[in-house]
Amino acid sequence: MKFEQLDMDLLQAVADIKAIPSGAVNIRRNGEAVFRHSSPNIVINTNPENKGLMVEVKAGSKGETVHVPVILTNSGFHDRVYNTFTIGEDAEVTIIAGCGIHNDSHSDSSHNGIHEIIVGPRARVRYLEKHYGEGMGKGKRILNPTTIVRVENGGSIEMEMIQIKGVDDTIRSTTAYIQEKGNLKVVERLFTHGQQKAESDIRVEIEGQGAAAQILSRSVAQDDSYQLFKAALVGKNECTGHVECDAILMDKARIKSIPQLEAEDADAVLTHEAAIGKIAGEQLIKLMSLGLSEQEAIDTILEGFLS
Amino acid sequence: MLILENISFAVNGQNGANKEIIRGIDLEFHPNRLYAITGPNGGGKTSIAKIIMGIYKQSSGNIYLNGENINDLNISERARKGIAYAFQQPPRFKGLTVSDLLQIARPGLDGVNLRTSLRDVGLCPEDYLDRDIGPGLSGGEIKRIEIAQLLARDAKISIFDEPEAGVDLWTIQKLIAIIMGKFRSKQGGTAVIITHNENVLHIVDEIILVEEGQIKERGTPDEIWPLIRHEVECKMKEQCRGEMVYEI
Ligand SMILES: Nc1ncnc2c1ncn2[C@@H]1O[C@H](COP(=O)(O)OP(=O)(O)O)[C@@H](O)[C@H]1O
Ligand SMILES: [Mg+2]
Image (cartoon, rainbow over all chains, first blue to last red; front, top):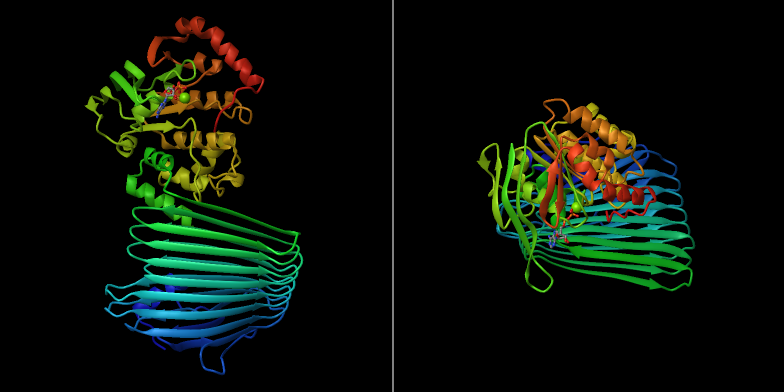
């Protein structure tokens, strides 16, 4: 398979790879798997409906990584995919997903990806998903990721979901169910600019005793962009849960943040914190007093905030 | 040389009327000399520092740096001309580490010097370099990191605003040793230390006493010390009893 420079640039932006990585890999380009490689412990197959991948991580495997990036370079392409990840008992794995769209045309390009992740008993998963758009055309770059996570007894998953730049329209939906002593941490980083719209809807149902969930969102909205952030934590047992959304608002952008706590058990301890504000003037002044220009100071503050 | 010429600074007071915080100040700071600014709280010391840094814009008067009028230079431009200020109450950040900030203060600072600059203010580099300048740090720690930045900048004019805050964690003796070491060498630049600390007041070339937005007295420690001794000693006692509250 030959990759062009454009492909490699997108792959680097969303999956941090400069070359085809070793280990298990599936690269999807314009709706087709253009490169696939399974490893002894991670098997990648096409699902029976031919709508996406089935990734299976064998029980007990340690220290492995699977890359499943998606890139769209054909203008006006609408991609849809359904991937399942099944992580066996006691396995430890890093999943690197992510989607990059390059659209130079005037028609919209979109990717609707559904990822279902089953974290087996005592398995530990790190899941990284970066979204990025670029291109000169007026056609929108649209990304609508849906993620469903099931954490079984004693399993844990840490998810980092990042929308870097250039995605015009996004509706992200994340739903998670956590069983006994399971643990979930979602870290979301969202940056919107221009006329972009982003909506993130996270719902975590903490079902098992002693389970814990954390949702941490940091976002920056610039120009005329709009963000809607909804995070609901449902505590159905003795458990702990925390939602934190922290946003920087600039220019004429708007942000709506709706944290929601639902406790169905008297031993559920759920908390939330939310803050929206502009860049603190004293931070700007401080960095300028170290010699940065105002713009450099703004960039430094935003970069740190989203890091 | 830095010259403040007839500087006044007014703000909108509570009842909408103008309130003059700084009233017609004349000052000059000579190269490679050590100055202390002292005086009661609310007297205008921090305001003078902020006017020099360009954070506050004076209502009238002129500021000259080496003969050039810098009235219209903004904060960044003044910083690049060699003016540096360590805040009395440094802000916190989200996602910026101690190392990030030191490297902004002194671009190109290498690992060895980065570590030294933290050790100089009594912080163990291994424990601090990767820490966020955020809510996880105490006021005293933030203060010392602020001083480390100022020292790292190696500016022509370094203004310290009450560096002794956080003294419970870091002995003032160490600060004095650093200041003596750095600013007593002839190329160390000019240091202006806003302070109530007796030991610091004794090592400077000149003390400037600021009260109610004006310069009440100025002179050598020998001349000024007898005039301020009582107040400073009271203040130091308060500090020793831990009653001095720094809102940082
Ligand atoms: N930005 C400001 N707006 C309004 N009042 C101010 C401002 N900065 C300082 N002041 C007031 O000016 C006076 C001098 O303050 P400051 O320069 O901080 O004194 P010092 O550093 O000597 O304690 C105080 O009464 C203070 O409340
Ligand atoms: Mg002050």
